[in-house]
Length: 166
Image 1 (cartoon, rainbow, N blue to C red):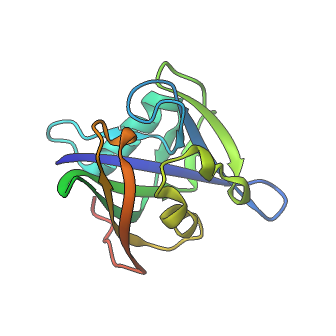
Image 2 (image 1 turned 45 degrees about the vertical axis):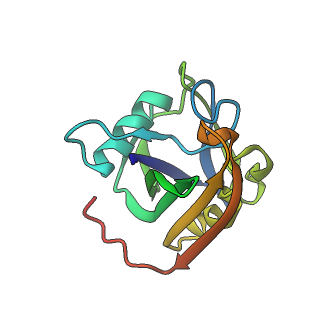
């Protein structure tokens, strides 16, 4: 199973609301879709270190004080495909800039483009952006790569204790 991370930097937009930093993927799995910065863990790397590295590489933002917000398991045709560690933070330095991998955009939390994201994101991301924790399993069938498979079912558990060690 592939182990990955997602990181969702948040900022106050000045009008008593929040913006979230999303990326439009420019290549690879999910190309053309929106998500948070993130990617695959490298050998010997902790999930937290991966989230920091991937966010820096993809958008040039140095994130810190990451809070673990989710653990998501993705099954493809009944077999484990990806395990994703989800983080959020309000602590970062720098201005997001585009890379070969991603084009970053600050988006109001109330305007997240779920119609341009993975089919499961609308089920768990609003809760994560609202400060909740989640553990989820998402089942896809009939496609390789995963972004060509059909989303068929899911299970979610809210308010889970995820620890903050990873």
